[in-house]
Length: 366
Image (cartoon, rainbow, N blue to C red):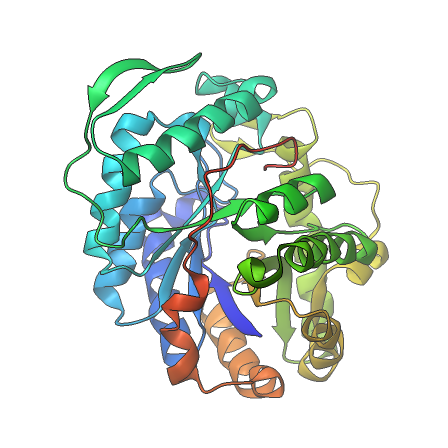
């Protein structure tokens, strides 16, 4: 199992400043490479102080300039918020400037607050994603693309320059439900998924849907991968774990506000709303614990053949604490799941390259 570090993008105190926030993210990417992580992840969100990063491809290029070999994953680029005629060229450029290390994770959007204010209501995002993804794939692989659809209508165009990676940059689909995972896998796509703070049975369903689809595909599905994103914090001791668990509960009080809640936001800051899920219930559904407990809990992921675990670890702690946690995880947890040396895993591009047919998305796309 490979490991991916989700670059910190939680901003509970805006006085911290964007310069320090993005500086922390770049520093974490450098450290992740030094520690043997296979990849790092970069989100896309706008207008809010949770997971905020309005330009994932721009940050991907910056990270590439500060690292040497680590893969750089968008988790995820929200296609309905972009014009594919512009975005395809930006993807090709980022593919070139990252020297082929870009892995384009794409989804349809998750937060109704930002989607509505940016002109694409969440209720329309699936249909727009479907058309956008089909068009993006054509623009990246074909010349003189002409399209007459619901959201796009234009005469033949060719994006320039062409991507470095052929036939196109690596693409992953973000989806959470059974049918979304199954259908996207059958169409030849790697998967990004997460149970968020849900019951462990949810992630088991997600992984099983991917494995069932791969089994149906036979040889064509052998190299398809599934990445699972979890809240993961490798604590120094039990007291540290309890403190970070309380911080995680507050983090979700903001996340839930814009994910499933009313979307109460003022001056870009999401209000922390009361949660029905208790801290004890949350503890059972995320991984905030010591390294010994962490190894036991990650063992099931390894047994279920999850290809890559994305560590979403920033709960509002300091940059220094994050760095110490990353080093603790790399030293005390990662060796228990190492099947190959980091030199072999860091640049194993071929296993992740997707060559499948061009799919239509489904209701599960996030």
